[in-house]
Length: 143
Image (cartoon, rainbow, N blue to C red):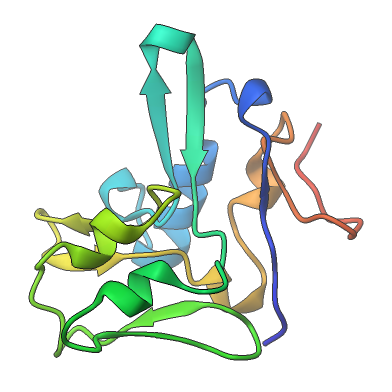
């Protein structure tokens, strides 16, 4: 799988959460935003909705912060992978992520981070305003 950067344009996000719905459908087969790897957070003080999604950082602070080596980063795609057998929910990776893009779900009992849906991010086509986009491609949301 090649690297798929997802550009986030916060000011145009309307908070519709279609990205969360598309992600949860892809990963869970049901509309359950708790299982989405992209999260839209309301910032009431600044009147903004903020999509949070893994930015495939280099260096990968979440991976470096994990004391159990439960997280790894694919060298070709940049995707962060989680070994659920090693993860103990210590929260070190969550605290280290500068984008608020990795989180523990108590309801699901697992660590969630965007895996780019195997190379074709399901959230991007549903972002009708372009808050999420794939730069340098013709792929984008429905407008």
